[in-house]
Image (cartoon, rainbow, N blue to C red; front, side, top):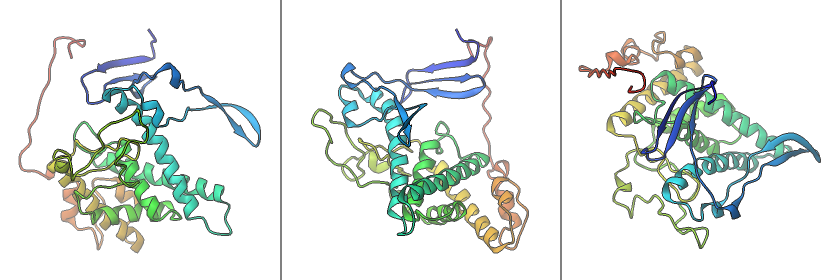
Length: 301
């Protein structure tokens, strides 16, 4: 056993089986998928300027790696596939928005860095306002990443502040359950030996009931926000509406960026005392349910 590993909790019955633990005080969610020997994924040395560096790149996963997987292993493997494809799509958006006097590679890197800065900001905002949790029916990291990537596809040359403002402006007006997609729906399998159902709200009755579909770009496309229910969707929409008001005030010079990351911003001409009150979760509802869980020892808990 490694003393740096603490609070180890395997959850084999989860939708995507996971081991949750802390490694040297860093929270880790570890997924597992077993692929066939004929689909080995060796790490490759990173090359820069023709020289091989001592840094290794992660193996790139393609559709052929899905051969022989069951649905649990597929969901585990697709976590990496979605992340890899997401980064490619962001950089492709940067290349598409490249001006004639710019180097395409420089533009791709600049677009990626702007995406990264905007995503960190949005995730911090979501965490501050209690919206960052798949378990509680809100949105997790991949959900927010897809939403920010959607904004980057629309404005690939925008600076991080402009991306953040467009993010709140666009999703304050988004007509849910209209799905958010980064790619057109892939209806057929990309490989003859791979066949999995894809998310389709027109053909699948269960998919048609999803309230806030945020669709993963890798095959097979899935709704990454299937946990969101009406109370969570209402809260997310309310907080996005408030954030849009604050962003307008920031651009008008009557508010600051700090107000976006606090539950009690200072009142301005555009942010009323009533809106400030609504930022506090314990003032938002009439009734609350408190649940206490007890155990006789730490192992049972």
